[in-house]
Length: 574
Image (tube, rainbow, N blue to C red; front, side, top):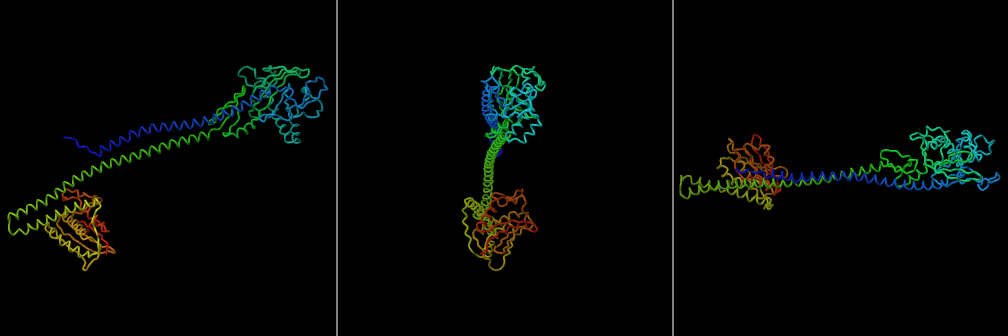
């Protein structure tokens, strides 16, 4: 026996496979691509930050190299506030103010300074206390003296703002003099020894990359400036230091980088940066300046930039998900539509098959009756007294055949939207009386009784007489057929009026209609599902509703009081 396939189920499986498999592959590949794009956005943002940090560090490195080169050529005696002209060796040589007396020429340098053999720090931009009461022990070769912090604080209140700032810087550097000396002394200390562990009184090492410089009768050995990081007042500072050995002893000279000035310049860049010693910090991208002896960097806080890149990556993933689910949803809707079409096609095929079978049965039964009674009349068979009964049977079967043909033609017109209904004003009461009398013989022949409840007098309404007859015929035929087998087979036709509508009601005393069947009561090809339900095409109520609506009315069903069904047709009053 050949298996019978359920075509909608097979179509659903095939369509689901055709949608789910590509959708799964699309989601897997698309999500990976979106994830790669998201990571690429973060990497690109990080690369832009690194490029910005590199460019700024490169410019700053070049500037530091130029400064270091120029300062290495600077004579050691210019680190004093004033000095005697080097071409004269006598005491009568004139005093010359240092080029550094008015402060560093470079805007990113805070100050030049010198620490003598007694670890006293002076700045060429701050003149010595003048006049000194007496040259105290430890004065340098130029007669400079170191003022006490108390004297410095007292003097600062009497100086102009620029001079006061220099005095405060001098005081700060003096607090860090010990760290400076320790840093220089530790240059050639054993590996791993901290500069803080080196005593300040330790003899300074030999100058690095030293050269000899003549100053009057003196010959000094001057080392090259080297970068160092020292902590002054708890804050790291970048300084360049060198050792100078002369006849009066060794000294340390150098300059302090103005990190605040550098930061103010870096903050004006498109990506503001910080200038600081190198260290690892989350979401901060730094580029080392490459300074020998001091690891400083240009650092850019990339937290917001990377966060925006991550948000853009999330938006990219979100766009992909929206596109995916939108496309997949559209494909699923299309798939459901296709399966629905297949199911609808299958349902129509089944309906047509049932319709063909029902139509054949509905046509064969009256045709068989017509042939039987026609043959009996033609051959003069049976009781001669029954000829009138045979004739009525023939008429009844002809009417039944006419109803079948009329319903089929009516449904054909309904599908094509070509109902030829033309409601005109007329007496609805008289039309119903006439139509009921035409239908009464066939109904009573089948064992039904008919009761009419129509008020006296005319009832004007808008209706089409042919459509009204077909409505009444279908409703009474249904009532008669579904009332077969019941003890009470009475049918009641009632006409009443309500506001601007005329109400035509047909009631039977049959089994009624279940709640489940009421939802599809007026659909085509729908009939009762019980085993004892009469045969039929399932088109009568569909045509009744279509004819009623074509006349501007409606039809409703309600369970009748005491059992049975009640159909009410509402038509417009004239």
